[in-house]
Amino acid sequence: MHLDLDAFFASVEQRDKPSLRGKPVVVGGVGGRGVVSTASYEARTYGVHSAMSTREARARCPHAAFLNPRFHAYREASQRVMEVLRTLSPLVEPLSLDEAFVDLAPAGLDRYDDASVRALAEQVRADVHEVTGGLTASVGIGTSKFIAKVASDLDKPDGLVIVAAGSERDLLRPMHVTVIPGVGPATAERLRRAGITTVADLERVSEDELVRVLGRAQGHGLHELARARDDRPVAPERETKSVSVEGTYDTDLTDKRLMEGLVSRQAAHVAERLRKNGLSGRTVTLKMRLHDFTTLSRSTTLDAPTDSAPVIARLARGLLSELDTSSGVRLLGVGVSGLADWIQDDLFGETGDAEDDELEALPDLPVVRTWFPGQDVVHEELGRGWVWGAGRGIVTVRFETAETPPGPVRSLPADDPALSAWQPPS
Image (tube, rainbow, N blue to C red):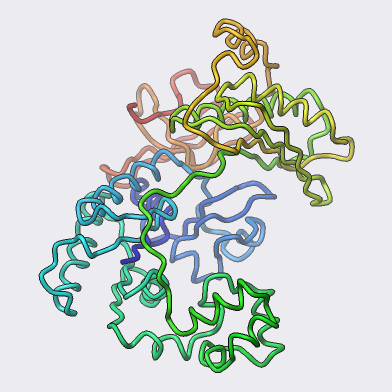
């Protein structure tokens, strides 16, 4: 089984913001350099899609609600969905917050005929709808991960497609080659030049010819998948290879001290995520994108793994000092890889107090944006709501929650002491 939550981020926003239900919603970076993460189906009718620039999305659908992501809400919904799946089978492989494979062999079915499998899948979809407060999922079921993934895309949103054993190749043959994982625009163009546009075309080509055109690994892989051969198991534990945090900025950064502060804050977030997951890492990487979209990265590797924010920050700042930032920087990111589940104590002979002192010594950064669209807030008198927009000393809030009808809109001073960011109970 492959389960994919429909327009996940946007659907969570519509769930939690009653005034946005049935209306176009775009989640992602809201600034001029932002990128769309998820668009609701209402926004997709205007041609808005993920990975599109926010600037283009605004041109196509100017009346949409453009919101920053609220990952705490997405993680909570995702955890509930994964719990539903794990009650069905211990073999659940999450691919992301909104997507997972499930091996149905341990699910306890007496029969694997269409009616039995369909009833099981419909119950899963109903349970997901209930535990998430109304979110829908598209489900595909087949004899392999590849076929299940293809099936889940065939009847979106809120669909269920079961591909019977033995019918896989008939399903695939009319499809464009890009349905196969790993066939992106560049590979598709190389295949097109060789006269291959559909899976049926691909199926007629020998493995030797595909290897000649694409190389051994990719050629062999495509030869197998074109014949619906995929023996990859559902892997319940997906190894985390790195932890990183990055940000894209509306205005090119040129102040080195400001960049050092931003890198230090990112390092602190990375360290927090490492600790929450019981991980540490040896390699610290700094990523930078310049004003002309040139992307640079520098790395340094420790003798032993660490999850220390000051250590990661110090190394990242050192990497930053090696790079020329005078022309302007539009993106900065800090990552840690070479992960392990143990930590070398006192790597630099530091104590907890020294770490605290270093964090306190981070430079005070100017607050560029106190409130962001979509942010959860609470007012001492008006209650809970979310930020519609902010600027010029004013913040506009719609006071409503998932449990209320569409609420009123109020404009307040941005520094109103009665207004604060709302955080879910820990």
